[in-house]
Length: 125
Image 1 (cartoon, one colour):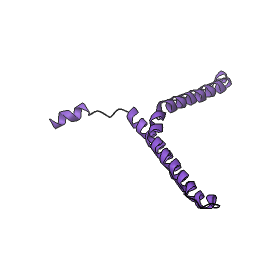
Image 2 (tube, one colour; image 1 turned 30 degrees about the vertical axis):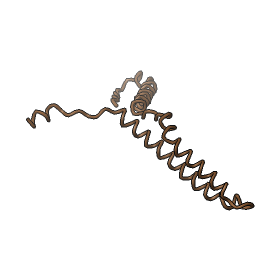
Image 3 (cartoon, helix red, strand yellow; image 1 turned 180 degrees about the horizontal axis):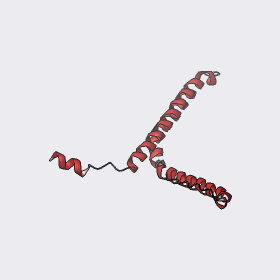
Image 4 (tube, one colour; image 1 turned 45 degrees about the vertical axis):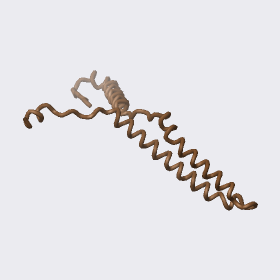
């Protein structure tokens, strides 16, 4: 960030000082927004995310259905609630972890690997 401020004793300068401060603040904000845009991470591939989670989703649904079906008559909630909640909790955690990992993978893929410096190559020869 490059910010230059000049001070002089001129009354006209003091009258327009507010304009210069406003200009400086607006410039800093614009530069900050440009930096944020440049540093923004790419979106994760949602289709890939769905495909990777589909098998786990099917397994969890099967687990919940089994918990309900295997519960004793008259005790469906008592016998199945904890098993279903545990299965869904594991799925929630896995889904979140997978989304974070795919986001990291997308960010790593967006940045090209650094090349070998030419002066370093000359020294090794």
